[in-house]
Length: 33
Image 1 (tube, rainbow, N blue to C red):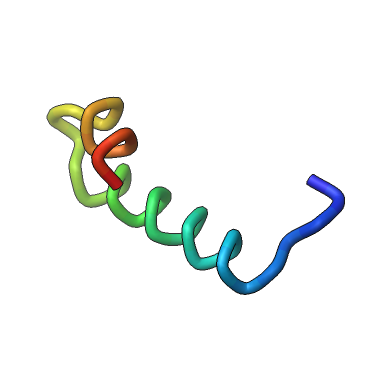
Image 2: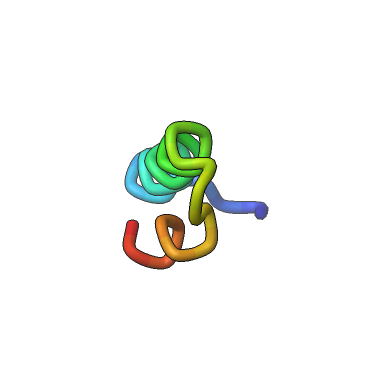
C-alpha cells in the first residue's frame, strides 16, 4: 500500500503475529483479529 499509518501497521503486525502463533486455523484467526 502507499499509505501505512501507525494504526494500519499495528493491525498488519497483529494479524501477522496471530497467523504465526495460530497454525490450526489461520483464516479464522485472521478474520477474528
